[in-house]
Length: 256
Length: 237
Image 1 (spheres, rainbow over the protein chains, first blue to last red):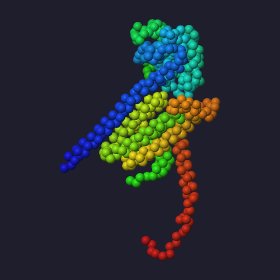
Image 2: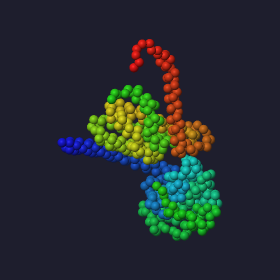
Image 3: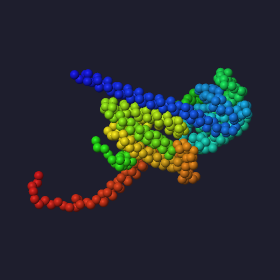
Image 4: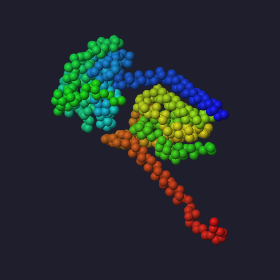
């Protein structure tokens, strides 16, 4: 009779495979337990390295990663509450590092860290993640070019709102040869992050660990629309055209 | 099956049956991360570790699993090893892990690894299977490194940039600027560059093989071709 024979071999194979699954999963779990702490430390070190590029180590004396508030606002372009890191020196808040997203990059969202000093000047901007064209748009990375340093020391009043655009749009910031869309997106996102900081300075700098409620933090919508559009406007486009053609940050969407 | 010698295995893995140049296996990571030497080396070493360990592991259990369930069992071994390597890289070379990203889990699907597990390790003892894994993965990693180095050189004009991601701070000044004031050649860094450079490497290998064969032929006395056999006796069959 072949059937008992067959079922016995099936049973044996299933047992072998099951044993393999248990052993391999067990090994992975063990290793995960073993490395979890180190991985977390490596992640924190990497984050801190990124933050320290903007705020040099001596310019604050608190644990930057542990002093954050979760913020969430259309001006920042973020969809979920993301931590804003508050730097303190001698107990006084000295700067904030905001995470902002430029939704209108050439190939999707550009993720930025924007450091703002307590007096409203920019401490530094860094691109953390992007998918811009290598060799053209990727000059926004510090590793590929010094353009991103041109934000250092700028503020909402220097330049004026009309200057917060690339030169092609009659603003103050250079674009790159062959790539205007990427710098335009970054300039717009930094400008909006500054506007956000200006509207929420007290909550951010006076913040304990209580998250800032997005609802109470909304400014007058018209106000920020105007300013936002201005910085993104092409020189030829009239205000009416812009309303139709220029997508809202929320609608542009982030392609995975 | 007869056990091949270490010499045979080495020649096979590094040259005659090179996984990247001859078998053309594992091309997805090969082309995907070979845009700089450090990325190539990182993935090459990770693949090597997985391949060596999986060959040894498969060889150890070759008596336990029968042919019906061998493939899922082997894949489980490979996947577990890859996950382990991924965790270790995350813990010790975090920034390189971030750059290599999705290509680390994809080591599981690298056909070189399953191919060697099923085709070699399952029929040989752990020692020789481990050695086979070593030379095969070295063959793969060397091609990956040459490809990455060439693309980095043509694309950016420098070699071995950012080696500290893999070797720590001592490697920070390993960067060699070959062409100073080089404008960069974008094509070499973009994916098409990977195909073109790999194609050139394969062509180069074939050319060398061809020349070796010619030389071998020239050295052999061509006696049989020149002597004419003249039948003097016997019947024609």
